[in-house]
Length: 115
Image 1 (spheres, helix red, strand yellow):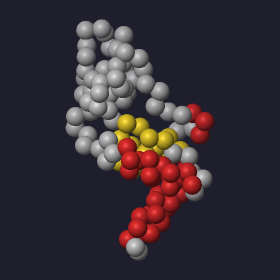
Image 2 (cartoon, rainbow, N blue to C red):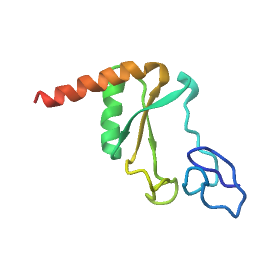
Image 3 (cartoon, rainbow, N blue to C red):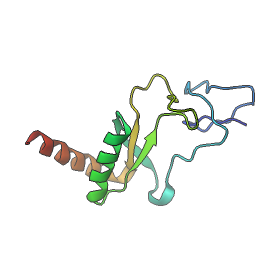
Image 4 (cartoon, helix red, strand yellow):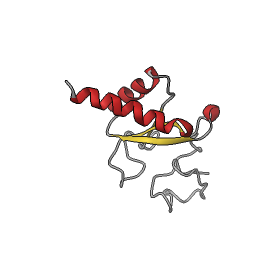
């Protein structure tokens, strides 16, 4: 049975797109949460994988766990899972660390402006 990579809804075999998320279905449900820290929330959307990796590194250097979630449909060669999203993906952090993560990125972006 196919699944939506965003909401993990299960569909019949003849369905190829999620009616709620408007994304191409995948053969297996996608694990989007890492339960080690509880709930994870989107901190920032990132335009590409390089920017996501840089920001993830900034956060992790400050002791804040971070994960990247790509908006591309798995196994579809770069096809966006949701054509209405222009960003490459999202930078996720544990929900309880959102304020600390926002402050960390603000400090980082402020340091770039000082150069």
